[in-house]
Length: 157
Image (cartoon, rainbow, N blue to C red; front, side, top):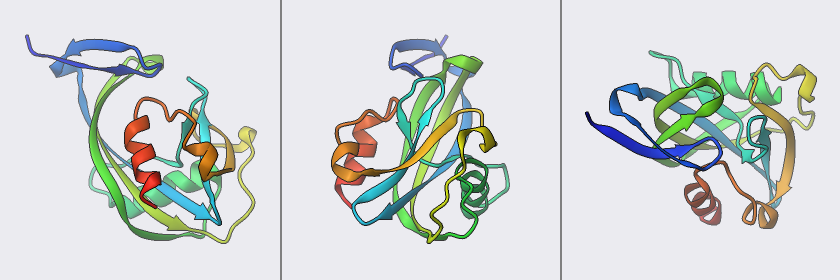
């Protein structure tokens, strides 16, 4: 039986049967304002993440990103720019026993909106505590299990 070795939500190594992994495309917004980036924390780990999430089969990246950003951060008016980076990532989301073959796409985005959705109004069960964080602090903070990729993308901005 073929297996895939990956990290779980908490950064621990796990090895699972390859047939457990489902294809999951996801899109994320990198909003910059001055020297800050919009981030949130994940409920399951407390680590940083970016607004966004899974795409729908047959939908476009733009449709998925607009939906996710609205549901999570409450941002309705935004401009979606170019693709900053994309990579494949195998992961295991322990709270829901979900193994995924992730295809992650990160887009530069702009918004003039300043009000962010409070935790009790967020329509996503995993995102919380949206805030604009200084780039210097971001580079010292953990991003779930893809630190190297996210820090590399941010350093290139």
